[in-house]
Length: 557
Image 1: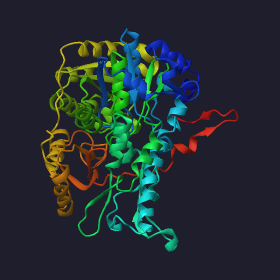
Image 2: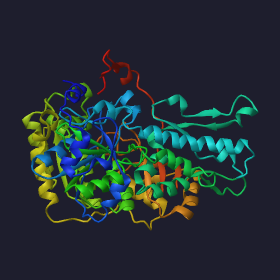
Image 3: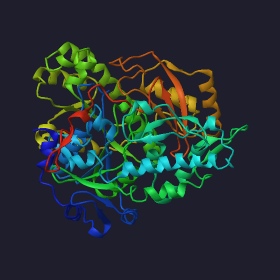
Image 4: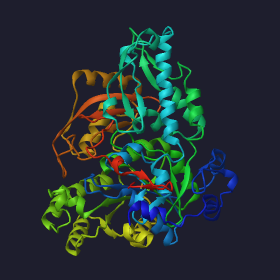
């Protein structure tokens, strides 16, 4: 059966009953959105403050390939597997974006028999969080142009407005636009553009805020533009916009509670991409889960060079989170792709290509154990065409690297197929605790932070930037030098060229643009020609999605 067929046939429990049964959460603390999804009240979250934290497990992956890796699927399967072996566990995931759902990637609720449900709701409108984030972002954009139209008391330089609009869709035609056409009644013409909602600073703030008041303060700190002449920053608070923005987000900020196919609780909240944003679910959801469960499984987007690095250097640094272990997801198919095999030949045994492609896994594994200082378990996400010889080769290679690899069959068998992985992870987590390390110290300059990520994590020889960009970095460093760096880079390669597979070394990473996210409290460094508004493929997934006469969604994957 397809993923959506499996999800629609699931034996779902009413979420109010399940939350009470599993974690003794009274219905008064839950705001239901139908029968199977709910939001957890902020008052209840505050009541958990004095509880001890559980153990945090990060799931990441090798560099993505067209073959697919199954990071979310593994996160769900591992959570179900831990619950099966008696470890009280909550899975914390990001919310899917409509862009990939209708584009090329599909949904992000897991797959096979390791999914969170209701799958079609989660992948589409869910509880409306993304709509609220987009509305809050675009309210600020509207207030900027309105302010300029009515006299520009803050002295905005229209050429230096730093706040685009957003939409949760892949729409390349909106990357660069002109607004204000049609005469003086429509304002002043200026160049503008759209990013996808998941790249919005509002999304980053939403995911990093620890309370409603923290959210409001961070929104007020957003730098939206600069003045004429002295180029002084203008903030959302200067426009008196942050209160209304927070009002739009007051319900969205509450974590979403759903369940897996095996009726285990999952929090799905927030959804920044890891290639153009910081790629982690909300701090609020993660910290709440840690107060409720003994084990919390969370994912970070794309490969470990992006999501895991930002999880450590941004999320853990800001929220004082202490991960206990990392699960690195790999597939035989993906590693053969990194070894040079074409996509249509990945189902054929090829030990030479597999061995050649192992360099990608090796780089990620060394980064996790070396630069992040954390124990790492390699999860081999099993596919039907994997051969015994290929699995044995991969196991042996990982062992030679000083690691441990476990075959996981959660896609086909649910939590039962991940019990071996779960037990291995539990044994590591319950062993001697290790303190994680950061890739760079807070005291380093912004340039040094970018250089550290590029050389240590990407294997680059160094970084470069045009003189104008270098000057912007130095200017930002004067006021924001203590901020972490959020690198926006292709997810397909350790380099800035998506076509360079494996584990390239000695390359140069060009910093083509920098953007200040003063509310999120990091600086975005765009590497190469990375775009913050994706486009649709020639045959988008939207062409196959439909609704039948009974109102059931079909074709979603």
